Image 1 (tube, one colour):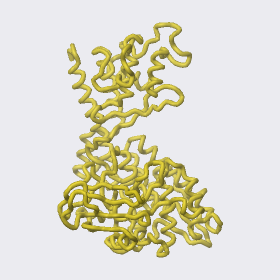
Image 2: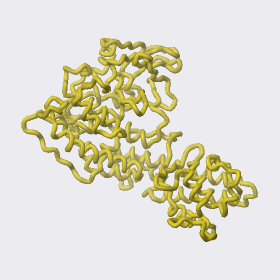
Image 3: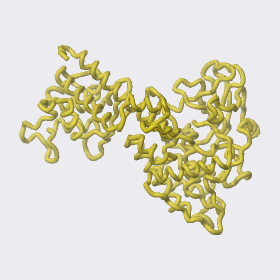
Image 4: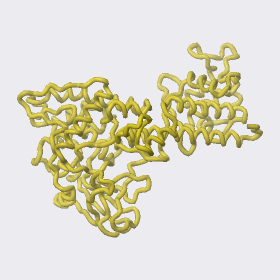
Length: 491
């Protein structure tokens, strides 16, 4: 999670301006809020006057929590604050204990007006649901029990694609993420206009006659998605955990979050930790797509990262041509009467693809490339099936096992399947406007091909796409090794 930032009015104004530019980049138009003439208006540019973040430890203790052996300290790179060990810590030691009253969330005891508004937000946008509660506490100011925490939230969340300008967003050149950014921005603009703008002066208003604009909602959404925890699982409301949410991410964490029976939570050391070391949590096995969208960073050589693509027969036909396999039959239609009326596939292949959930009206066509086994098992199994000449080749083979890396039907089928997948990787690589070496050089120099300095957002976009390219190149390399290892292979 991004570090806490000191609260300054100028920073907040810059954050609001960048967010508006990001909305413009995503939706290709700037939405203008009509301000109410008789109501207060809460903008993202409204300054939060935070005390030193160290006051959060005092606040937790004053509200029944416990803090031991940790301290809030500035990050070494100047990006804000983090949670560090204030002394040598022992494995299993409880470092922060947060009772329920110190967890910012919503439940059946939340005021009905706010819950009614929360119910208008789709479950998939869990962060937006909690963002409304954050805004509710923010407009309460000093009357909120969470005021010290709210005032120390970051004035802007750097690195989130929702804040990107048009050029960095385009530089991602990766449709799964840009589509998600556009969907979030479009929903945010619509919800601010249709649900929030009419509220002031009505009985349904949970924000004390304060007009919430799109920038304020965007700020709250960014803060929540980059800091909140879903301890109760995806079906339960997320929660903001003061002080604990200052731990940064690592796939090799030195701390863990432990729920207790009374609803409280504690931060526990996973190992002995020396004095003056950052306290790290794992946010989970997340791909760079999720890390970028919700937290504003990417991890090099992320073991959970993947390249997404959509399964379709046209893609496979194009890959077959790239792999010079035009003479190889990708699916059989020789036997009249064995194909369905809607496709050229024989029924037995349709049934196999349906079993893999890659065929039919409710199919999940999203497959991936990358990882330890560099090909999605469903994609590998499907291509192996499509290169079968008749159903007898599948006898005695469970389709679930057919997608295992190395579990081929026969060498000839496997060569065709692997060459087709390598061609898919090549096709995907060709869709980017640059090759990995060009991205690496630009990032190393900090300048683009025209000699202009790269912005922080542009650097992040280039780092993201470079990691995707590395995944595909790794997949091609592993496929090549697998082909060479096949029995009877002559290269």
